[in-house]
Image (cartoon, rainbow, N blue to C red):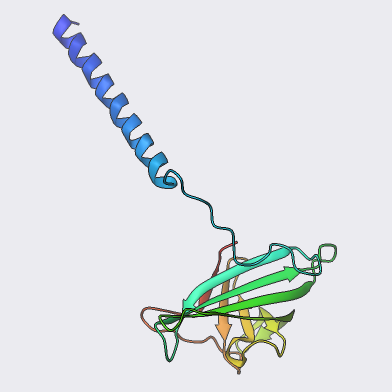
Length: 167
């Protein structure tokens, strides 16, 4: 290899190293900006009775008199038996005061909805709003809000009724 060929190869490798370092540095700097803090969840990870968090689910669902309703469902379970214990439900009317309303109570697990006899359904007690008492646990990460007849609720083009695990 000639001197100019060697110089070109070294320059090429150097350019790749600089490029990779630049991309790595960019990723590191955009992952968490300097001075940023990690926001703790609005809910405790252990209930007042000492039960651990089973899951936190959130999404923006349709709202009749606001931009969207930010719905959060926090589920706790018994540490020993894993049986359902308590829940917290939070609703924020986005664009209409943005105040948080919280309901709490007990929840249970049932089986079956129309057309899906093996479906796992999370039922909330009478403390929950009527339109948010039943959730189809599609898997460990997704909950679909059911109507009062046990049917999946239908969203709009911008918002829906499928809650995602966030914690």
